[in-house]
Image 1 (cartoon, one colour):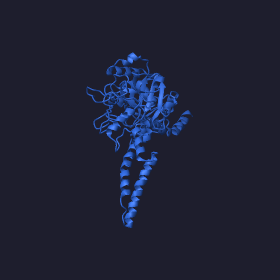
Image 2 (cartoon, helix red, strand yellow; image 1 turned 120 degrees about the vertical axis):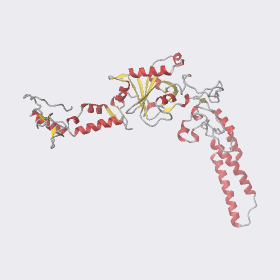
Image 3 (cartoon, one colour; image 1 turned 135 degrees about the vertical axis):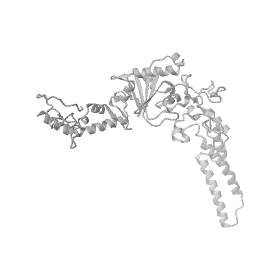
Image 4 (cartoon, rainbow, N blue to C red; image 1 turned 30 degrees about the vertical axis):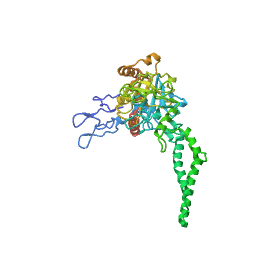
Length: 447
């Protein structure tokens, strides 16, 4: 409800009261006390128009009320439509995740995006003397450990406890073996030495012997052995891909052969990683990407996480990523490269570039929409141009409709920004302060 000019000729049957009277500047204002006024329309002490009786432009707006009824603030202080509760997927694998299926589209919401390094031609490099995992120093973009499918690296990566990952579980054996090899000759020399005649010196020498013996005994006890030769036997079967003191780097590199299954790189018939022999990525392992033609630096994509395919999502389906903000950023792409279950928000380097991020993405509100469509293995194997990928995704996004809204307008309805929500809350709260005066005025009008 807003302000409107008053009548120029009085209607005796009108409930609006007396007509507006000429003001000092020749305009019709609301000088008569029987007329509801707008701010700035009653004569002031200087003959000018100043504040009126009631600021009717600030009265309760039904649209504000409707907006607040349709939306809610989540525990993370993000805003979403209350209707999304009816479309949220309930699978245990998605526990705690923001994922919905609405009008055929599968929607995710994450606080950050991660670059899918697997798709890069320089993602993984064989270990070198300078880098046990082939990462850094101008080598691979990611740790070789992240290309291991079995035994998995997940626990070790999170806990940093070596016993949580089979490929480093034997590292402590080698560390203690190196230490024990240094303690044994020291202990033997100390025992063989002639005791000093001085009492204080003799006591000190005896304590040194005891300290060395205690340290050696503790090592043997920790590994369930009684002598150095038994600890050496344990080292023959221990596995440690890390570089540790007392062990050759060549032996540590050879322990990568204990990987049962590689997940991120191509292997030969014997299961060994294939190293690219020519081209700009020569010397790097060849990434294992589906579809095989996908290139992270060239093609925009969102990673397919199991069990999305349960809801119809297939490789090469259209996908859209939105950085939700007052002025949202949109990137159009496809679905590619299968990822681990429940790990949402991985996209290709090209997708991040299209969103305007040259490096990693800052924390924020990211909406990912995937449009399921049946495709054959033959279709997946055919390379699509970047232009075709983006055009298909844009068409699917703009055609996606729910309750009369489509595309970006639908996203704004489902996921308003916190600032928009706060503005409506503020307007609603301010308007409520005018209600008592407005109601009293209506009572007077109805008498």
